[in-house]
Image (cartoon, rainbow, N blue to C red):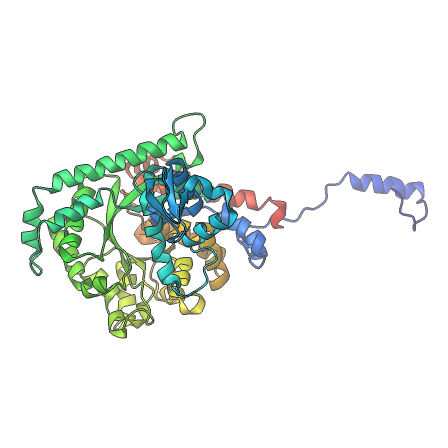
Length: 513
């Protein structure tokens, strides 16, 4: 089309112009993934898009019961014909054939928007605002679990299915979920055998006859959960959900707020379960660390782990430690929890680790964690909502400077109303992370996962291939043999393939340019 402000060109110029159009234009080289990330890092919408598609190695700190959104809980309660209490804002454990005062059928909740919103807020951290009787994020967060506990057992498989599908949508390769199958019977066994001071050997001997039955019940509960999840996800059928492709293993989750004999029984049965069932790859101890019982018995619990490490060696530990602030406990209570978890209990990973700077001699502790490759599971949203710790007040940068390995995780993504992408976005925006930094965090998730097998990486250096796979392509005989021998290495190799596909795609995606 002729421009209105230019005259008709002589024929010679027209011929030259035609010839020039036959010469391909010089195209700018596509941006690398790192350049694309730099291009969008200050654009929250495109950054979220970029990081949602970004491959994430693992979510290693994820309580299954807290991973579920309140809407799902209410749907299941309606399906089961249960009641909800409007006064207590919780799901009740009885059929709603004759609702009591202040109760309505869960099936009616969806027809009343105000009621539904109030229940969702009570069952999660959505729109939390301090109020009389509900004054802190800490208290509101931990109170949510009792409000939906009535349906935990019946819908554990539904929960697993939801967690796996969300992980798949979030491009997460591996989930290490904390669960407590058959925990009621284990706690009951502990109460039948009182613990005398720290005589763990006597407690172990007293429990020994009951342990095989307790382990069998835990395994049977896990079987039922997985069978229900496979049905929901339609695994093995043409209609299979994406969640079927997510690899899942479990940490046996024990409660720290009970009397010593009940805590010991959980740990003893937990160690036995890990040894008996390859689906369980380690142990954790959970519930509010600032609880008076948990604070009083903290050292006793660490010595329980120490004893059981000798009885049943080789069981891996990821322990909640340092999820504390000066606002929750006296300063004396902040001096040694992380160190005791590492040095006494023998933890390979620490969950939260927020109060590390307040421990005695934090410099030597950080150096020890770096030297021993003790990884920290960082839960940024959770630490903000529960502890009020965020931004520069969080030890994320301190751990990085000390060379302590870290991976991002969700903690309780349903209660917190988020996912692993949210954690990556938050980390990227708060700590000015580069694309290489994010990639290292993703790789660290699989490097420090308890899934069995040797690592693809040499000497805990993600990105540095072991000698068998150093000569690409991976189809070399040595690498193929190595990958066949290690489930962990296969997952890591799969992550590298995902990075290759992702980086190729984003460099050609116009939305990011």
